[in-house]
Length: 96
Image (tube, rainbow, N blue to C red):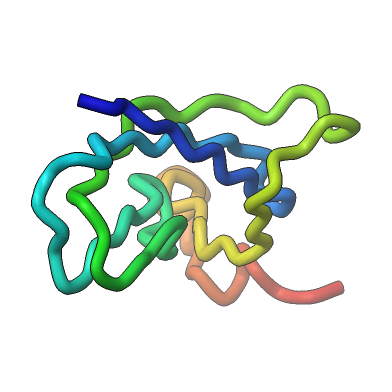
């Protein structure tokens, strides 16, 4: 059993994803891990052992990033539209 870990940093939302797998397990045709907050694909691979998101944390030091970096993030604040009277998604995300 050879436990492996891949770190993926998202510089847009400042998150670090810890993705783990066992490299002696059976390879699957396609694997992927998605962000639990915005559903963006954080990691994907063809012909790879099963992967899992072991941990997600705030990216504190951007001076020491991982080798795998992504910048796509689709997170949208749904709380504000529920708490601000008559607010819509368009109101919350207008470009200024």
